Image (cartoon, rainbow, N blue to C red; front, side, top):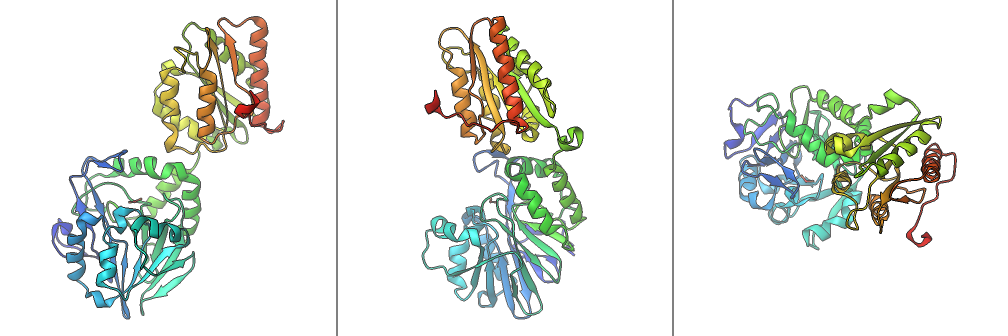
Length: 422
Ligand code: FEO
């Protein structure tokens, strides 16, 4: 157990269990990670050293600019000649920056990576000389009285990601998953400040688009007895590690399923200048509402914020967007919502567009293209109506809604509308 309040500000390694040392780096001044992620107090690049009776293993390294710190910490507890294995749970440069120099200093070390990391290793590290062993779930390597077992956990958040479990000490080296950008030199979750916001923010921006893979990974991880989760960013989770598994399961599980059971959820978003697109939306909504097995919801984008709508979209089966055409384009609130969907999984959802227009009416097709770009299926050609919809045109809106609703429950064969069909 660490006695110092600010363990990680000391130059040496920090013991986190009987045979495991933290040898990572603190980066308290970082404010933006990977262009898109904000962090109010920096991050950490966590690397770990595991000592067995027959050698040592390094789990991940650090961002290249922090190499000197990393090597000093490593040298405080090991000779390079003792390093038998290097495990890379993830190849992103914030964890592999010091790898080339580590391989130079410990050329005898065997490198373990996931199967999917193989093609990425050379491209990322621009290095031909590394020999490596690809591993799968269940593979183990022995350090004598300590054993490392690998778990294949792809897309958390890259294809290559894996976790490594130290069997005898019940420590899970999880890579980015269960991590967060939160720098506190006290290092352990029971000592650092309140990092709940950072933990959830990190999940929402990094893991959320891959929640199906999160649930698959949890199936592998949950049966393991855990004394500690040692992620590659942020606090080491030694106090109640199981709570973090539960929290991830809650975050990755749809709450909507328990609300609407087997019904399909369709969200209709619209915005309207003179009420014409609104009339179309209401007619579509009315028709969809009559289809058994579909739960439709209608939202005026003028009255809502983007973030809660993104949450709704994540759990929906189908989406419709109603937009007028103004100056040859869809309107900003529609684009704002569509450009915010990178954090959720949209692939395979059913989608469509409709709208009233004055003279050109490009918006519907532009929105449809964006929906396809997000890998959604557009089963019914978008509906455009010039200015005020007539009674016949409102019937067409109802027919459009019925077609979408039927496609949603699988009552008709989905026909993906390609541009060449126009
Ligand atoms: Fe922390 Fe995906 O690198």
